[in-house]
Length: 168
Image (cartoon, rainbow, N blue to C red; front, side, top):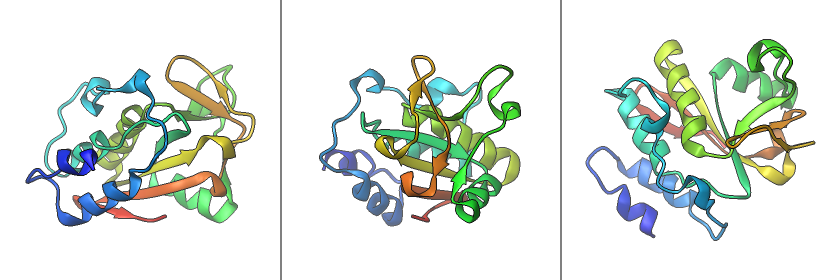
């Protein structure tokens, strides 16, 4: 229940507390990312609606059996209709292949916040690491997999209009 007590601040509404409670389970936390905040990955301070999203992501623990991805609503729609998401080299950089996800929920949250800021909405995914095909470490914080299949999604949250809505 520690995670719920941490989010009993005025910034969190009852719905956010319920969503965070659903994330808390017996899975092992990843100590490598313990204590990180989304602000560690941002060069700007989240304000207004973005502050709500940042506070939500800051309360999501990074677990060793999960990876995380922040994406646009367009990418999420693609993933949902096609059954998977596959990045092209334009998304991941020259000479790099695969579809990226992060070992740290706050790093992935950075991309969700950027999309929410630039596009007005975004989606934050919590993924089952074991369900990602050909998963490999790319560096200290990123994973790459062949695709992100729809079945790998444990939780999906929509960030829009200053609210966090659970999609999956």
